[in-house]
Image: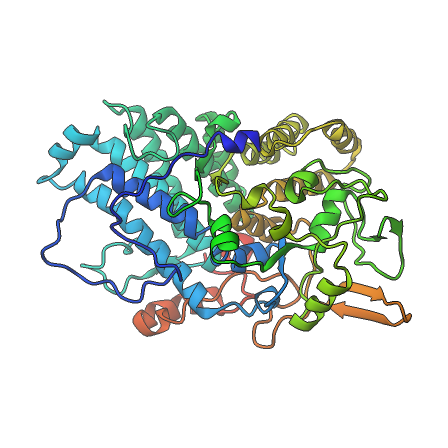
Length: 546
């Protein structure tokens, strides 16, 4: 956690052009004809970054969507989302608000292109093209998030409501190709900038354009690698991004820092747990067993055949030092340290409450131990160096040296004591005889690292199928024998009407509001993709549309 703490920047309370309410809901945007049409571009940038960092990674947009979908977390009280009955107002708000967040970024672009304002803004804040490039990079990050969540989305006509009140939906391939082209141009413009970056308002890099260039190339690498899943020609784009210079250490991570208690300075999950008094989430059983190096067949420190949720762990026998960071508990079981478990994924409300009470002395309660992820200064990560290392390993046919660099960087970032972990992992990795086995170890390691970056963890599962042991619909999630020798068995079953087929939820359904406000265009997108369901795969996962 030491490396994470370095990025705990103070988020100042400046005037909010677009303020998000406590329920993440924009019910109405009023237009004030007397309002100023100009604004400080540094303030526009910092507000956009802060809003994305707080709301896209909070207990609603992350916690009850992608954190659940990727099975890092289970809910302990209201498990409908665990079984894919996602709240319509949450999904609607996620879609709508991300476009609203981008309005600030689009305004930066407009102020630096409008002949009436561009010269003034260049004088005040730096090279016009530099300001535009940084805003475009941030827009690319948000657009990728949206298209990975939903598939086809408004893109080419989005953010221009004066001309396009009902924007068309571009195919996901069109969006990806557009984002890659935009990032390449942004890098060219940043390299050619006649000034430094923003002297204030840059919550990532404090105006260091060399780091923005690395972020843009790293984001292009992520896009190209994901697209290569369906078209190998994108691998040349990935290699070009690497050559163009990507993140080279944890100091290059794109992170929005938080500092201390009190809005807007506190981290989103701290706010959820200690301001809103939520205590809804626990790590999943299989995630913690993955870290402990078991195959899900250990109960209370001994091998068990009655209290299990078995799976095949590629790290079996190797204890991950991040377990203690993520939970505050030691993974070593002794008389003074009872075994600690996560909550089996996908059980109903009453069964989850039963588990919570029956295994009261063994479960991990985040609220009571306050691990680092609940600290008020825990930063939000948009993209980081360990992830880049794992991507470079993959592009280079599961290269061992880049895989090791990724592990070491992740342990450093989380502040975990490596011990013999890296040596143990690399010994096993180097003994593998197939690319598929190496792929499983790399992607599963990335999954471990991506805790609190759930949008990416979920996307990587959909792209690769790893970790292979995440609980699928119809599969056993937990069985145990009670003191009266009664055996209870639970399978994961999505809520009726929210089914995802035989695999994890593949995408989120389009907002209900789109069927009212942009009906013909959303229906055209659905027709191209196949259907608006949780089992319809997105383009790069092998689904429609091209």
